[in-house]
Image (cartoon, rainbow, N blue to C red; front, side):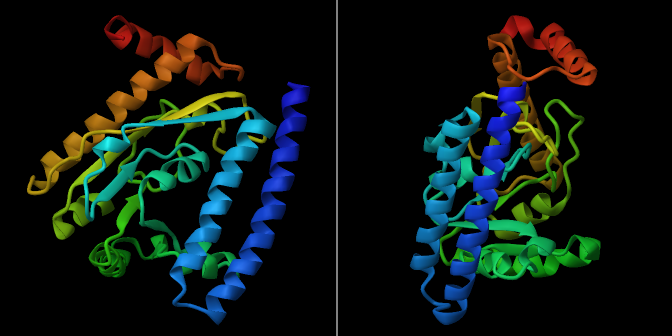
Length: 269
């Protein structure tokens, strides 16, 4: 554990230093040349791939992403499970021209927020509750009209592996209003980079794009299909990873959840 703690400290130091420098550079450039989206996205891609490099070679977290063939041509919504910051770096390279939905607090940070807005990030003010939806919808519609794929975490925040899911209504309303396919994404990143965990654990974090949900369903049916797709596949992937062996220590909660999952679906894997 001591060695992994040192590796994690080194990762966080390099990560935060690089992010700060890039945010200052990119944020400043966004004010000087606001229409040069390609330049901003180029810097963002460097940031994404360099973070994956650091995770692999400093912290020991490999990345595996499958199912990209399920992303349809044209505008769509990507609805992903959210367990760690890894999710952003792993998913975005496969989406082409993304428009990422993020909480307004992040976009209010000087330089970082300017940088995020430069590359089509859509803000949602969670303090407004339901009143935040019209603004988010308008920005999302504009992004889709520009050919972007809108990325949203339906639960709104990071959740630990095998926690009880808590899906919000934003993606349902977006699905109904935008009339485009929604691609669910299952993943296992929380097993390696846990929410609020100071230590990153070695292993292979995985994400999987699942078959798209076609437009035109009722709100209730869409939500049922979305939750079933994401949670069923995430449970399968988490159990598969656990069976291979995890470097991290298991909390009593996670150990009990894995045992329950093994009893429920173990024979189907």
